[in-house]
Length: 185
Image (tube, rainbow, N blue to C red; front, side, top):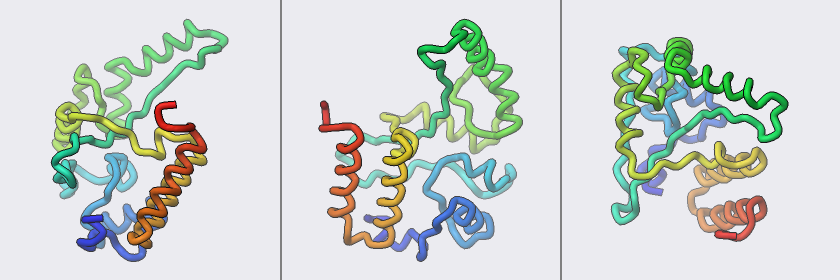
């Protein structure tokens, strides 16, 4: 609410990532409240004035939690060839494969075995990750698709009408409990 009250969100709120990236790239926006994937989307160069930072706490009495987007791989429990699948996963997370991947798509690699020649901002992003007290995932990445869509829609609705916060929080809880049941259950 502090960011909304301070006028930090643009009106109207961008409805597509490409619109938000365009606004950041051409100087109409000063900040994008999302992850480091923007580097690949906007094709930003090392000299661009874009960086990672940790915003100040809203409530200093709460533990600091940092949002981390973690992309992972898994083997289905009933895979036809689990040994071969395991070997593929080991190759995909090898130091060499992670370094090659960074050269193709420069995302922060959360593995200190890998030294792909980071851009300075990526090194800073890795340090912020390592210094985090708590790590959390964004709702849309931790939820199934219908719940993720509900969460994104509720956030957009909040930006359009911040005074509707209590009703939107109730709708978020309804979506969560409908998908996952009672808390602790």
